[in-house]
Image (spheres, rainbow, N blue to C red):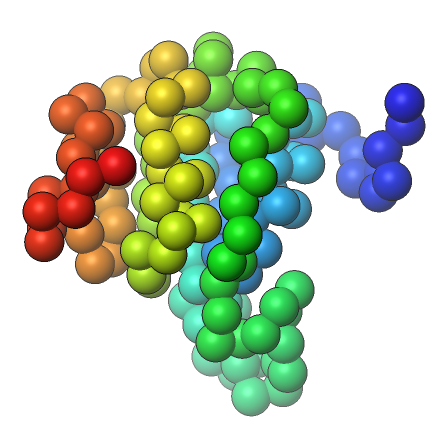
Length: 137
């Protein structure tokens, strides 16, 4: 079965910075990036240089929004099993979709070496707990 969107080969990609407005797009890249070691999620305002913000009307969804729905991927990308070491999430809002994504990454990543840094919460991957405000996932 061929993908609806041909996105190319990312076999040499080791670091990825992705906008949180659509978590679907990064999953397409993950499935083709077996050597990925660093994954950074950032809100649209932090992803783009300030000179582009005024010209940008919307990203994948609303510029104020993050993705609100989450679907479990059908298979675990190779990079989660074999190479991903660091995850950072800027402008973390704690939505259900974001929490589900974090839980999925924690449960399926085998090589994470560092704790995850979130802009509003400190998340310890080894303990599986969001430590600020007592939120657990």
